[in-house]
Length: 245
Image 1 (tube, rainbow, N blue to C red):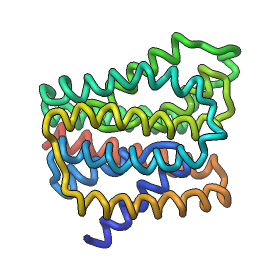
Image 2 (image 1 turned 135 degrees about the vertical axis):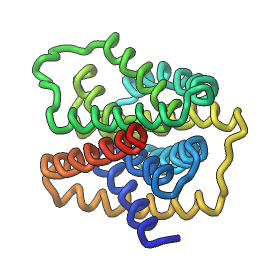
Image 3 (image 1 turned 90 degrees about the vertical axis):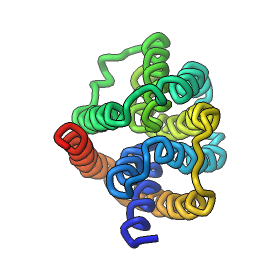
Image 4 (image 1 turned 90 degrees about the horizontal axis):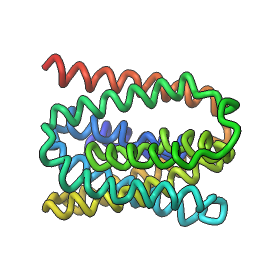
């Protein structure tokens, strides 16, 4: 395993711990555009590693999670992710999937830099939460992005819970959503090498431990700004790579 591999996989864990998502936005373009891994195995590897690590973190923080919005969101995103991964992903050209990935990454980055004003939402909005769940599930199954960075502000805005609590809830949703999408990919016979999976899991886990400590010692606003700029660069890179070449 190259030193760059180690750095990238640790950064995936850092993103998950500090922002409740964003790991796939690093992992998938690295696997597909740098390591030349085909889209389906790259998505499967992302779903497995991020699903397992977020699942472990969710179990450890289960008492601090507001499970009602998590379960409502998951009940809608779960079947959508499974259907999208099983039927939509195989008929969508890889270049189109990567373009969607790039556009989604840019959208998330802009939402981080210019967040929606929470004061505009004075009460819970179950319909908006449900629509967000359906969209997130479909995207997860298609391109392997759990959407944790998108889910956290969605829970905060439409269910009126503190953002910090929404981050832990988003990790739970990402874990459940990943399981759903995995059903679709395994159902199509997509596989990955177990040794590679274990190596990446260990490094992502290490990144999550470091990320938890870093988050406690650093300003959330500064961290989000830096990561948002990074996501913009990733999104532009993916779009240029797929549209221009």
